[in-house]
Image 1 (cartoon, protein in one colour):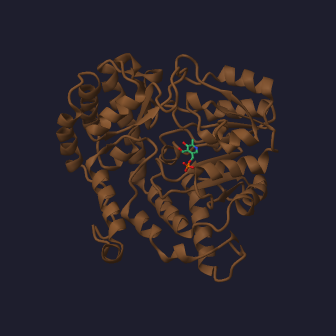
Image 2 (cartoon, helix red, strand yellow):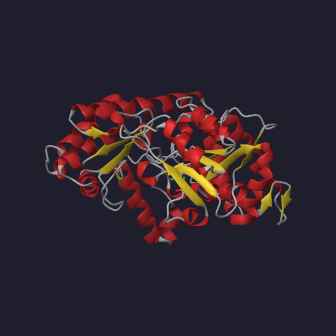
Image 3 (cartoon, protein in one colour):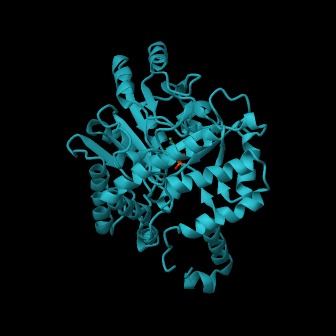
Length: 417
Ligand SMILES: Cc1ncc(COP(=O)(O)O)c(C=O)c1O
């Protein structure tokens, strides 16, 4: 690692960065919402765009000196439409949200009056906190109704329709944080039309799969689409909102000045880099490999007797109920971490335990796929998980196997590395 100025003048921070880089290199990261950005994305984050204020939108700024920022934001917006093959006549995009949560809040602020009804997926069944959980400002500001999954772990679209007919929400949200099956955007679109509601697809998790052609696209069915840029899309931390053109004025006003101040231009530059990378043919291969890897991991875990929610996966993640092994999710996650396998503990549908120590763990393959791992390595990882959680071998003994894998599959280099 070579950051000479940090090393010379900020040694404590330098050492922390060094430690974190070492950690990332040495563990198998199965957190489905994380990834490794390219060196070009990291370089864009560390550019002088971080110095500039650009409150407002291109060609309508509150600060002077924004001729270059305007070009950057216009270019990034163009790329955001291009990765989804959208026409600028029909669709508008806002690339300023600082992250996925403010992007969702901006959409509700723009389109739904306070106290009015929104229908979304229950957090316990896979929805996100900003889909109206009571601990989130979203659940305290808008009146949320929820749908979930059936006992089989799949969304029951007939039930979604029944709830929608009864609740008559202004907005329906589809898209999830912990759902391993394809989302049928067409079915959600039909339900929303029937009750005259708007449809928001939050594709934060699957955006990279959509761009890579490995998951259906929501754009023929949704009025608005939000997404983070740092998960399967493999960009910097950030988010964007794509909306039908006639909704864009309200959405832009909700982002700025409604919720945010100046955009983080360095992040926007890095987003543009990630979008350019996603346009390259090998991104399609990457997206397909993510799914092949998750399916291989799920199949192997099932072979060992693990209880995979819904019986498998169509996307980048899977959920495992670990309670039949006599383990709660927290302990399972901790045992795996000792061996250098990083997952996150997660609620499973109909969980009787609490979020801090739920019944499940959530595993995903975007990061290990970026490292170049394929089905063969997924089988090795599943075997390590079995040895820790079923055979109850000492996790420190498995660590050697993990290190052999991480040594062979490097993470993308850091600038100056
Ligand atoms: C579906 C979904 N929406 C929104 C978000 C929020 O994104 P952020 O953590 O960037 O605020 C997440 C993050 O996990 C998510 O999974």
